[in-house]
Image (cartoon, rainbow, N blue to C red; front, side, top):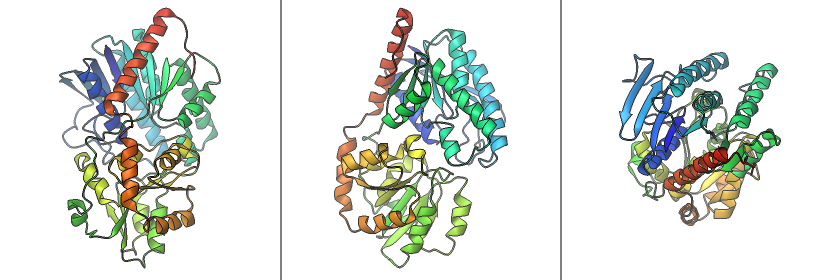
Length: 417
């Protein structure tokens, strides 16, 4: 099978969605499928084109399994919404052109969102080539941007809502990460069109990420010692209310046995650092290389997942499964009744509190640090050992590709699940 993949990031870019689609692509290639990938030049780490990739609008490379075409993403400051929208538009135009004129006619187009505009690029390519399109939704957009206040103009919201529904209804299938996200998409489809909505969760690689020694080089490098480490590792953006970490560090600064770590970068980091400038029990660490992920996870005793109110039904933090695979418990500040809360309840590998509730968050830390964290970690690890593997996720996509291909040939329609 020939698969055209349209995605915002791909290795060596370090974006989480890039890691997901890269692993899926490699697993598809291992099964003998050919791929053409259209993506961006690496830029996620510092929001600028990385050294060694600059100087060209487009770069192509041939691989053993196909070709990668990388186009300029026109990166801008996340806080500059008009500039960011223009950047997305330029990236989408280039992506559309090189998707339409990929060197081989694909059997199917797999498009990843966000950004939502890539759905349009994938649909145009699929339409011109007369093949099915699968729209992979990692976060529901524009819901996330509206909830955090990044988009507030009514006219822009209406435009994005129309584009969202347009893409859903013209995709042959939409894949989402959880039942929450499926319900969100099905509601927006409102029975219109024949789009199938299928849950294919992100994988966890339990062979690469295993429980490791907590007294490792990361702890030594950043002076964490034998203290209990409460860690947030990931993007520092508007979706993550990490002022909770600052408030908890301030409230618990009298406890010499605790230290808080915020590992990562993003638009909100400068403000967080300013607000925590007087705290010596909160340490900021830059985003670490991908290969160091198991070590970073092992260094934390309690890992934090935090999403602003309302986002738990639009987004599933993929870091959840990596944390559990590393044998570490989770403290989640997130909407009740959502995927993360259900997983923690089912596994017994952590606690959840209401989103943006500083008092509940701090109280939960004080309870957790006195519990058997090692046993919690064991339960989490046991839970994800039965989770979907990278090979399993790739197989689920192949099954979907074949299903929608057969449905198209038979013209029998598709039922929304």
